[in-house]
Image (tube, rainbow, N blue to C red; front, side, top):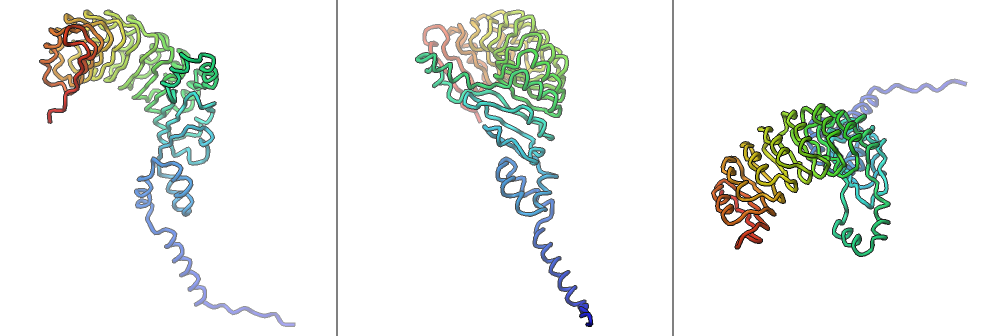
Length: 357
């Protein structure tokens, strides 16, 4: 029995190669550079990138994995999974009283993360305030579902996300121990730790370790006048929110040494008129909030020194009509809030000056 021999057809092979080249060309309609530009328009839509774009072809998937940096925002940690998390540059986690948990171990999946916003926010603060007043027992039931990340979460962040430059971890009960962990993030330029039970113990870690900070929000913590001297070592700081603490005249004096400040919120403290005189030495300020500080007319006599000031909130103080006339001379202001001050026609007075140009 003879074996059948198959004939070799060079034309057939050429045709096959041509089809493969054509198919390959069809799959890669765009160059990697053009494809990257197209995908960049959707970098803020993580689900669309992962569930649609990455499935188009191998080329698309590779360009995403190798080059694209994306933004992810979610309120459920079950979505925080998969290989594309290594491409997340900005992550916003919506933590509130209705989120039962967040597994901080997942921070290790974010290889390129530089911006993290994981502040704890009340979903409906007005409703919860009403509930607390009307049915305290039911209010407590809601609070039992509160899962702030605490010092344990702060440790995960400090240990695993050393590349961070932006961190908002407000209202998460990290305390001084958590602040120490956060101080490992030496590349930070922006840090928001409002309402975290941080005292001078935590603040000294920030002062010693975070030398690149330009923005610091330490509102609603346990900072006293003498603690403010720790801030003067932060030479790069231009934006400071230290409202709702316990600063008095001495604290204002320490703050006045931070000549580089452009933005200062020192509202709801105890600085009064004498402290305000020190604040008026910060001649680089463009925005100043000194509301709720019991400042009188005498305290604002040096306000004209702030020639760069464009936004001023001096509401809920003791400014009379005489003081109002002085403030009215600050022609460069584009925003002014003088609500709830004392004196005749000043009561309930609030002004927002329209931009002149």
